[in-house]
Image (cartoon, rainbow, N blue to C red):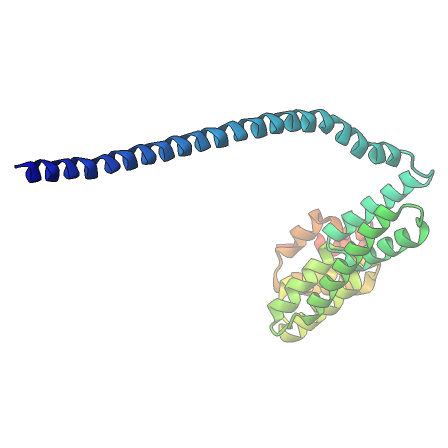
Length: 242
């Protein structure tokens, strides 16, 4: 019986170390908790440090804007030729929008040559000058085949008052459609604007011959204003006798 008691005591003794290990584990958890707490406490000062940085950046923002605006305020001090440079630039832009690229190129070239003291305007003028040149190249690559193709290009040239080019394209259209009254009428308009009286009257006469209603268009057409007082023109546009 004494041996049995001794065996029980040994079992209890074996159980005691396990309790000790649990206490060690708990102490480790406590340490980990303390470490987590230390990390969180380490983070809070970092956050507190970043807040003043944000405040400082906000305070320095007006200073940065002011420093950026200083060159802009300095740019207001322009040369005495600045207004004329702006006028020349705007005139060239209008020509470009009207697709009068040849004239626009000449204006941009003059602007670059005559205003070296305005580098910003010069650089922009050079960019637009190259854009106009590209437009002309694209236009030259356009393949014209039919009479309508030549007529449409001729009318576009006529609207831009590029009269020589308009007459050239319209004559090509007329070769493909010799009796086209609208082509003859457009040729009459272009020649009238260019001051070619005889050619204008000749084309207008043929146009009215193929379509008598064209005489009423010519009466109200501003393109024929140079011929308004011409006796032969008045006779052409006079109503036909019944």
